[in-house]
Amino acid sequence: MVRFGLTVVRHGETRYNKDKILQGQGVDEPLSATGFRQADAAGLFLSNVKFTHVFSSDLLRAKQTAATILGKNKFCKDLEIKYDARLRERKYGVAEGRPLTDLKAMAKAAGEQCPSFTPSGGETLDEVRERAREFFDSLCRLVVEWEQPEQDMPAAASRSSGAPEGQSVFPWTNHCSETELSSGGASQRLDANILVVSHGAYMRSWIGYFVSDLNCALPTDVAKSQLASVSPNTGVSHFLVKLESGSLLKPEITCVCLNQDSHLVNV
Image 1 (cartoon, rainbow, N blue to C red):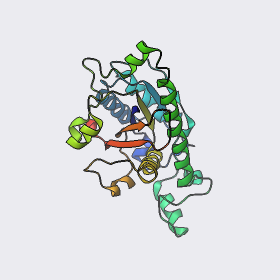
Image 2 (cartoon, rainbow, N blue to C red):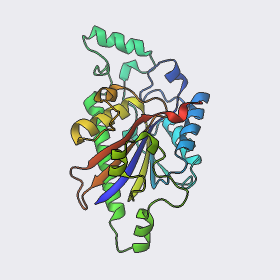
Image 3 (cartoon, one colour):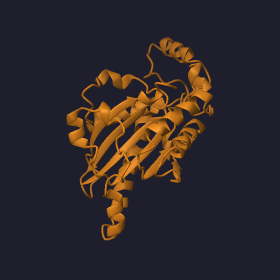
Image 4 (cartoon, helix red, strand yellow):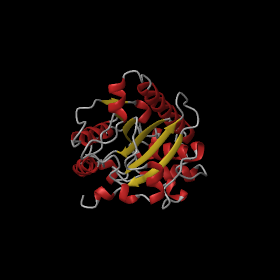
């Protein structure tokens, strides 16, 4: 059995987020001053987590968020960030750079509703979900291949030996029920612990894929209706993924927390 942790964080705020203007892939805005403060807060929240891999969308707002979070980490601030175009925000075509109200007006004129409406030149929800599926499959392959050489015992032991003293693998355990903790376990040993920084609409599609296609178990206090909500900027979601050794089929996924934003209370 291969087990890994997956922490997914939405990027910090940009001025376009604040003004409710669609960025998609064509508008590459940097973080605002508030966005950097949010990223700092998320970095402090995750500072005791020893990540083995870090991935980010290659759009600037996500890259800056990932770098800020990693810069606060006590164990792996020098870890290389891998940039992946599959983690980009949903493409909104002609609606990019325009207010969200314009997208809603386009949808209404077409007799449809957001977010299922696809503007001209944009991506469908199915296309976004397929990008998410491809990326998650690649993560599963990565962990299985990375964990394979068991003959290298010192390396294998260091990977799965659990948290070093002072390290909290799950800083959000106070937001979990006893059942979720016993199934995941704050002290459970992991073969990898992966951080991913992406975007709101993309993350909503990805989590929807987890729940509808892979039967991801949700926390007891999360209703399925909440899956339609976009994560707040630097909202944190955490999952435990279990794979049968040597197989990428039917991963068992448990959501430990969804769109957690307790770190933003004073931001």
